[in-house]
Length: 222
Image 1: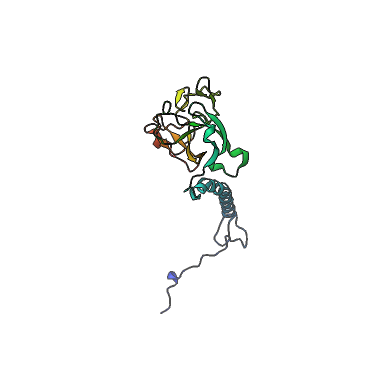
Image 2: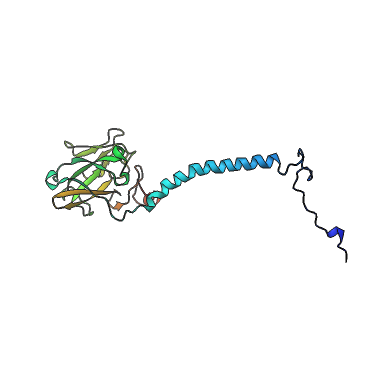
């Protein structure tokens, strides 16, 4: 039986002129609009990848770092510190190893004093960060008033780092401490709420009391 000509499949021509495309040229297989649209999408994809890959690597890179063992740094002999006054020491932030001077910061260190310190953190020495918990400006300790003062925006902290006045939203961050022989070692930084409960590091301006701790989740590095 001969095939029904009505049921024959008609192969679509690859040429735009044969398909009746307006403005088509002889021998053209793709319209200029399709070509330009595809080129624009490809260029956009390349540009997006160029921005996204470095950002993704920066954000996810710390997740693959081996932080199972904290990095502790020697800040002096036990004889260098007392429970009544702070001694400023320069350390390299654990998350900034290999960045040179940019990774260094000042930390105020003193021996734990039960008359001042009511926290239950269990560290033998108190090591307090100089980064204000308002906007991150550097604070300094004034021995005469036994206060940490932020000269930029008027933040005031008590000798234990708790907020005494001004705009800071939480106590000053601290660093873990331990003693090996007669040497005092400073380790990783951590944050505190107003009750001196320990949290993983947070950025300045991020309160940790109550529900706020859930609104400002920790980042891999701060």
